Length: 255
Ligand SMILES: O=C(CO)COP(=O)(O)O
Image (cartoon, rainbow, N blue to C red; front, top):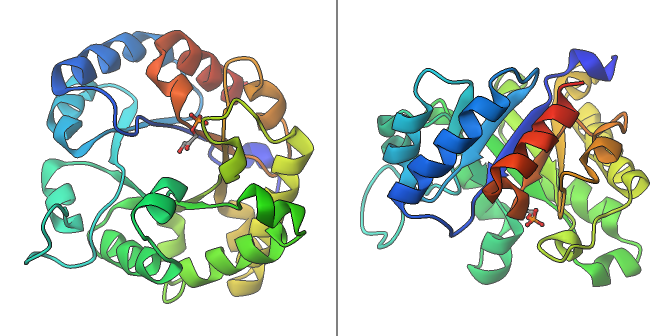
């Protein structure tokens, strides 16, 4: 399939940044800069900012997402938010399995799978994150590891449900470090993920799925990364907090 037939998605991951008032300001600043985008534009914001971001994004082409969700509907899970709760706000996307969740908060492939199940059951679109540590890359196990993360995460997900899933390849050594994967490295692993999806489902599903690259993507390097045949978008951390930079990346994905 021609890559251009796939939907490019540029998503900002704001991580633990911005108060609700600042979220309104940031969405308002981004809105006019991306209004003509020829790709999907998303901002994944802290839970506390969801209402403000949704309000500010109303009537625009910016979709709003959360950064995690729990698999249970409700109950004694202090500090967690359920997929049902997210849906009730009107949010459309949720990031699941970000490496910061895996590294700092004990997220495993199994809990990632459970969270994906809950998100899909509640009609949310999922941005599933996979990626390797530098040591794992140096050991030469990146491809196997990322394929395994993808397989476990997608366990029990039907071919139809797969349409609601975006996969983000985020090499952990490139996140917040200013060290970007080369365009070739990014493309290689995105291709491995696509081949894994083909094995799990079929070629048509693999051809159709959006696979993003994330890890120090910025206004300068976005075009080269996004030009790669298997890179269909970006999951952007630091640069998503800077309207002009984020807009440049959206522009690079819209060519
Ligand atoms: O983790 C990321 C997006 O989810 C990438 O973060 P940076 O763009 O800040 O490297």
